[in-house]
Image 1 (cartoon, rainbow, N blue to C red):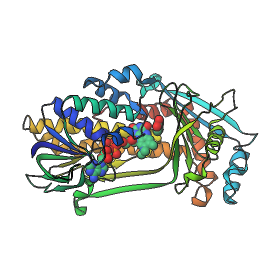
Image 2 (cartoon, rainbow, N blue to C red; image 1 turned 60 degrees about the vertical axis):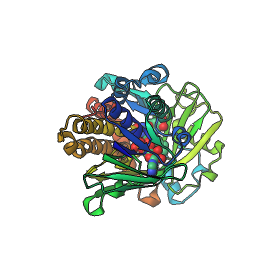
Image 3 (spheres, rainbow, N blue to C red; image 1 turned 90 degrees about the vertical axis):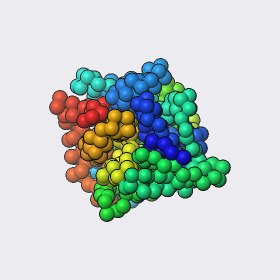
Image 4 (tube, protein in one colour; image 1 turned 30 degrees about the horizontal axis):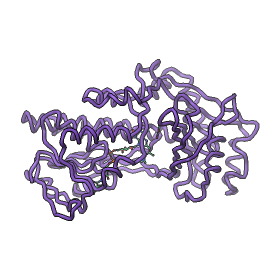
Length: 426
Ligand code: RFL
Ligand code: PHB
């Protein structure tokens, strides 16, 4: 079989790329390892930048975002602190005592919650709209347009990507071997897919940071206890209160990366969330409800360059991973494929190679900006256990940084500009 672009991976990057290419008159075939149900059911990101929403709306995918998404002007940043609380947390870690043996930050601690209004600072908002919903919208649109797609494809292999005639081979869901020749291959197959490593290691450079903590994330059938997301610094570790709808909350607590989820009963999760998010402090309470899903999520920063090798183009998590604290991963995938679709259509429709030649450099400018922002938010909000090199100096620096971004106009504007999102072509 022959097509113009073979897209490996039908996550948000691959699906959106096929949609954008179709609108530009470029034919593509999607090749995905999982089943459609599996792809549609993965619970991941929850926040869309305004430029992502604008892009999705411009290409006919904004109807449900407008009807069911929730526009947020900003976020809450909070911290719970007292000199005694920090000293106790350090002592507790030093003694390797059970985190639950003491009740959070203690009675002397004070919780400060500040609202950071992105619209006031930079004139842009964000939207809470789950990645599952973005994926569903994209899958429906692709299906309605008659997109050619192979789901449950195995042994996906990229061939001759540095030649004029690249191809992709795989075994389809019926066990039949397939080969697709194309003008270009788009590697949208996430962090674990085969595309990145189809670039010879001598031509590739990677950067990586693995963090000494992870997130335990839960979905709960309970109305959110807040109107906008709460990012909370706490001596016991970070917590985040997010949401999916008026009746479903999404919550996270920082845990060690090697944490066994079996040790986290629902009661223990709610206790940790209540302590870290400040239940009972300043008149705020955390509503609890049935937990319907829980998982431990490792955190890393990772960038692989270049994002183009010959006729292979990487986009989304295939080329870069950010820790979720800045809510950037999905948005970066959307920005990459927007640039890539423009570049491929300029080449394949109009015969101009300028944008494909600059694709890697163009995409990486934004990738590194988001990589820095995600690292910075992560480093500001997570406490490193003392046995992993954290100390009270780190904590004082984090608190100082939090005070600065919540009290200084330039400090707040910097966070707001990055969180609400830079223009796609930044
Ligand atoms: P995906 O979504 O991983 O999709 C890749 C697809 O490729 C398929 N694949 C293969 N197909 C064929 N052959 C193979 N050999 C293949 N190997 C893999 C996979 O099955 C899959 O369908 O990558 P994509 O499209 O680049 O999208 C990236 C986003 O999914 C990711 O960056 C975000 O989910 C990150 N993220 C967040 N991003 C945000 O912008 N805002 C957030 O609030 C946010 N929160 C999060 C997140 C990621 C999380 N986890 C689980 C990592 C919260 C969490 C908990
Ligand atoms: C989410 O709702 O899943 C979410 C929100 C904000 C983040 C990360 C995840 O920074």
